[in-house]
Image (cartoon, rainbow, N blue to C red; front, side):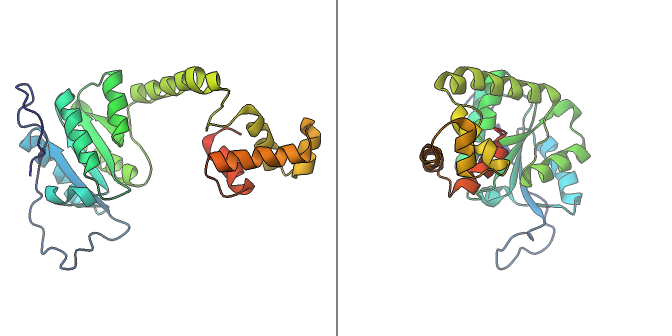
Length: 244
């Protein structure tokens, strides 16, 4: 199966889905792999490279390779290409748009990326980025399993770029609007930090010099704006976001 992409003489035939070898009868009920097994598909611009990527995935007990025409339900889709181009990213966006599995993540095996390309790839759900020249079978399997379980395997340079982008966002967007990490205001952050320390709303009010009614209004505002259930959920959200 091929993903339809715009014609481009530099990337003709790009992103060809590679079907795995027949490894036995298909699941007659269509339930797919057990919950502890990661389902994965591979798309590549070179059939030989695609087969090389499929080999360690087939051999891993943690991964079940699906035919390319079942990519919409896969936990992870591996996309391999020699060069990252606009055509490739169009195809990756198309794959992301066709996903029927809400947990779907993508792993990209490619050459170098520019910053703008990296931002676009991450926006498509790419959580693993492996340099094509140094991608080993064990690293590929680890990246696929990690992607399916909420992790990420990326080069140090990519990690630094993402951190720089996060700092830029914090400085130019959040700070400019009086917000901190997680979209919380400084006052909301202070209130939630004190609640996390075990203070009740009365004690928080006394510590910050506000009325208890004001503290309750702050909590109502943040839970409504961020669609949180209650103050406990708000404290948990702030902790996960790294705001407190």
